[in-house]
Image (cartoon, rainbow, N blue to C red; front, side):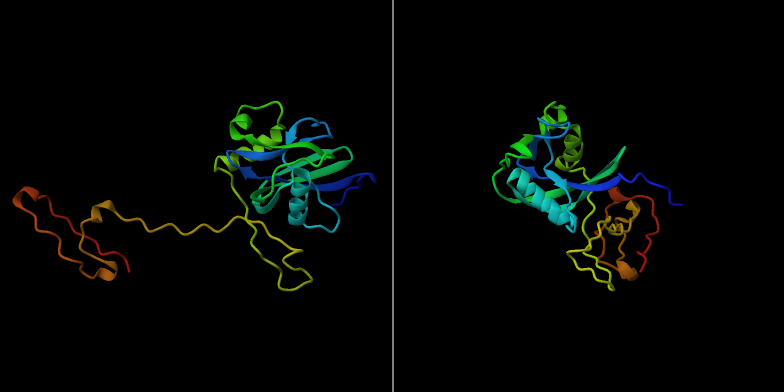
Length: 214
């Protein structure tokens, strides 16, 4: 059922990048919003007709002076305000080149903030930035990679359509019974090299070895 929505209500999509550099993460100090004067992930709003990836690369370069490329989606934050639904998608990024520098408009500083400072809950860092960056820096982030899927029918290309989804895990290796470690069977039941002869001191209760399933 479709419910009426205030005419002034809008949907906004933003992107932010977690760019690991050295022992920390690239952050920028904002000159606007309620977080003015604090360090946040570089990023911003997606322009009309722009893809998420293009907006991310552009915003990081504009705000922090660094070129980086997307390396998977790691977090989504949505916020419902009286006149706006604000969705913010956070990507892991690979640093390519450039020296951190602010643009002097949206940001007045760009720096690599150490992971230890994020863990300590530094008041100069927006908590959302630390919450998104630390799992990646600690190697615990779950990434949704880009799959490169494009619908076979329709007007879309790799630049205008992208799917981020969990990868199919590899099937687990078959488990072997530790009791079969000495058995002289290979796949298919063929005999392997004879086991070394045992002396009287090695005598132990006999058991039946099971051929590996074919």
